[in-house]
Image (tube, rainbow, N blue to C red):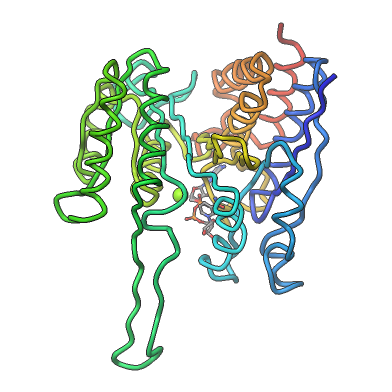
Length: 357
Ligand code: NAI
Ligand code: MG
């Protein structure tokens, strides 16, 4: 019997609700499978911790996390704490030291869910967005001077390194190669941003030489929003910078039905550090405490975590259970225009896992 050590960090707002639901679903996966156990440690880090201790996670928190096989994360952000403090104090404070440079975001239209795009079905929209997750626009370079004075200045410097761009391009080409269509779109903005984005394009072309069987094209990010909306079937695997992919993946989630269903994996592909799995949404103050958060994105993130741990059959069983539940409109939460609660969806997914082959 294998045991995996999982660090659960529910964080704030609906993060607490969906991670609690996700842990129940994972427990059902392990008891149905019978070949692995999950040893879960809960870390109460986030905005409440910040209000009590002045930091979002304790000093040495990163060292504590090193001992885990994976991290299961909710969301961070509270109405009364500045967003840049919460994001940098917890989520990026884990992603960056653990070098989780590849952020993988699959999007599909699940059974029973309708795209807001007329006539677009699961056949037309099956994408994986690869987000560069360690540098670019979110590298953290910049500063502010002369605060409050008329000459106040702030800089936010994008960093593109040959090492950073090469490794994410290689990761994206490999992922595209592993998918049936072997199709990759490299998103850029090298018409307006003529240094970092031109390096990005050049390295894409270099790496492409090592993947002759992958068909790839280049798309300016503004035009990409149009293509995603009007011609979704022309896309498959997509690679974009930290900022571009952040924005495009919310659009992708909405086009597939709801931001509440979209998962993500923050991977350290070499396995030197733990990887982190989370829904792409935030802490959703507007619905916190109402018991109506859609937990599907968090469940799908658990699928990605099980795959990463090497439990492919448990991962596939969980995905089938999720799809069986989304197929029933009576089990849709309000973001999908239904009346179901988080609890109803969670119970139904657990029942589907325990009853499945
Ligand atoms: P958000 O994703 O929290 O919410 C956007 C909209 O989507 C809201 O109307 C919300 O109710 C809805 N929504 C999100 N997840 C849902 C779910 N599972 N089920 C049903 N509806 C859902 O984004 P917003 O409002 O921009 O940010 C709120 C806070 O979350 C901010 O503090 C922000 O910084 C933080 N945030 C944190 C992230 C993270 O920890 N990874 C990611 C995005 C935002
Ligand atoms: Mg985002």
